[in-house]
Picture (cartoon, rainbow, N blue to C red):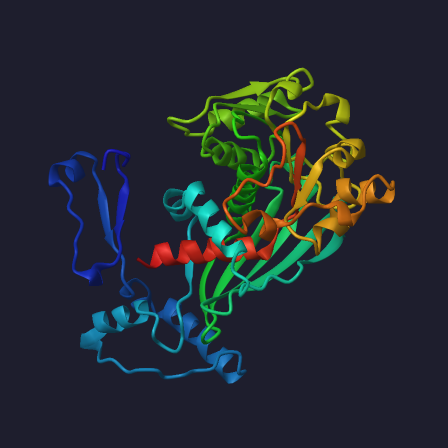
Length: 411
C-alpha cells in the first residue's frame, strides 16, 4: 500500500481462490482508494463485449480454425474444481507454462548449472545435432543477421528447441543483440511443457560453459580475469567468473568506457571478486591469467606478442568465418580446445582463418567438450602452455538448462 498514490485504484484478482487480500482500512481511506473486484462478470454483463466475444469464437469454429474437444464437464457450482483441473495440466487442452526471467535468475546458480552441464557432456544418450543457421538482411542495415534453429533431446524425458536471432545492428538501437524463444517438450508424449526467454538461457548457459571449460584449462592458481566486450553477455560473464573458485580480480573492457561502468553498476554481486572497469586493455592483458573475449569484432583484439605463458583464452564472440577476436599466430601457438567438432571448426573465424593460412589443421585440435568433461582431471598438460577454448554454442546446453529450470519451477 505504501507505493499506492493518492486517489489510486486497486484491482483484486483470483477471488475464486477464497483468499481475500488483507488491507488496513485506514490506509485505504487515507489515500481515497478505489477497489475493483475483477471477475468474468466484468465482461459478460456488457452485451456488446459478450456478443463480440461469442462472434469471435463461433466464426472460427465455423471456418474450422478452432476445433472443440470436450474433455470434462463441470457443474457451475464446481467452478473452483474446474480451475484446479486446468492447473493440474492433465486436461486435453494443455496450459503451457511461461517461466519468467525473474524465476530463472533467482533460482538457478552458475555452480549448479556448470555441474549439470558437466554431467550432460558425459551422457552419450543426449543428441544435439548441428544447429541450422540462416543469414538474412533487413531494410535498416547492410549487416548480416542470423536466424538459428537449435534442437536437442535426451531420449528420456525432454525434447527442446531454441529459435533465436542474432542482430549485430541492435547495439546501435539499444536493443539486445540476441532475441528468441525456447520451448521444452515432454519426450514421452510430445506435448509442450514450458516456454522461456531464449536470451536469458543463451546468455547464462554461454557464460556457464565458458567457465566450465576454464576450470579444466586454466592453470591451478589462476586468480584474475580480463573480459573484453561490454555487450549483453558481459554481466553474465562477470557473474559466472565471480562464481569460479580462486578468482580474486575481474577486469572489464569495452570500446565505450561509460557503457562498461553502467554494466558494473547494474550488477548485484556480494562477497565476490571485485570488478574494475579499464579504459585500455593492452597494458593489462599480459598480467592476467584468463582472457575472455565476448565481442563481435572483425579484427584481432589480441596478438601473440600480447600474451604471457600460462594464460588461458576463452573465445566466444566470433561465430562466423569473417569475425575474429585474436590473431591466427596466437591460435597456432596455443593448445586449442573447442565445444564441438561439427560446427565450430567450420564457422569460428579464428579457427577457419588459421586453417586457411596453414598454421594448424583440424587434427591439431586437442579435444571437445566431451573430452574436457569425461572426468574431473585438469586437461592442461603444462603450467606454462597457453590454452585456448573456442565455442559457438550447442543445443545440448540449452536443453540441460531448460530441464533444470522446469524441474525447479515444478516443485
